[in-house]
Each structure stands twice: as C-alpha cells, then as structure tokens.
Amino acid sequence: MKPLIIEEKAHLPKIVLDKSYGMFELSGKCIPKNPDDFFFPIFDWIDEYVKAPNDFTNVNVHIEYMNTASHKCFAIIIAKLDQITESEEHSIKITWHYDSADDDMLEMGEELQECNNIPFEFVPHKFKSRR
Image (tube, rainbow, N blue to C red; front, side):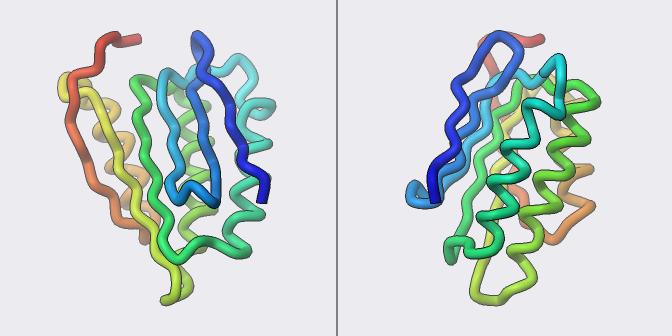
C-alpha cells in the first residue's frame, strides 16, 4: 500500500499515513479552505487500510488548532479507524497531543473518544504557537 504523505502548509497539517511505518501522524494547524478536497484522499486511504490493517495501529495527533469543519472530518477519520476494533486480531490507539492551555482541543479529543471504541491517551504539551 502506497504511503500518503502531505507536507504541512500555513493552515494545513502534515499527514503521514504509511502502513509500513506502523504509525500515522497528523500535526500542525488544520484550517483548510475546502475540507472536502483536503480530507477525501485521507478518507480513501484509510478505507483501503482498514481492509487489511497492521496488527497494531498507532495514531499520533499533534493538532494545534482545527476549525469546526475539520473537527467533523476528524470524526469521520476516527469512525473509519474504529472499524479496526471489530477484529480481535487488530488493535489501535490514538495519542492526542494538545496544548495544555487549550481546553477546547482537549475537549475535542475527549468528544471523539466517546464516540468510538478506540483507546485514547491524552498528552498535554506547550505548543510554540497558537492559532
């Protein structure tokens, strides 16, 4: 399966989805002008991945800020990844890194955790910049 790598830009996060790497990473600010154009390739890649996932999938999220449209798209991503938990042979974990001064990002992660069966680990940090 070919990796999907999107480099970080001013208002777009870095995305690394690489099955052979064993860890998915999403980092930066997520404020796309057209969320559908940005997220559809990610949705498609994840749809293919869940058909034959690794035994263990580790997802690291280091998002400093996301708008409402991006939050909805993250909910879709996590719902797609949640399909992995339907098999006892496969497991998944999401590590949600958030700015310790940003309760909104912590709450977003907690809301996403409540809607699925994926275990989350919440890790507070002090990010260099905010919004």
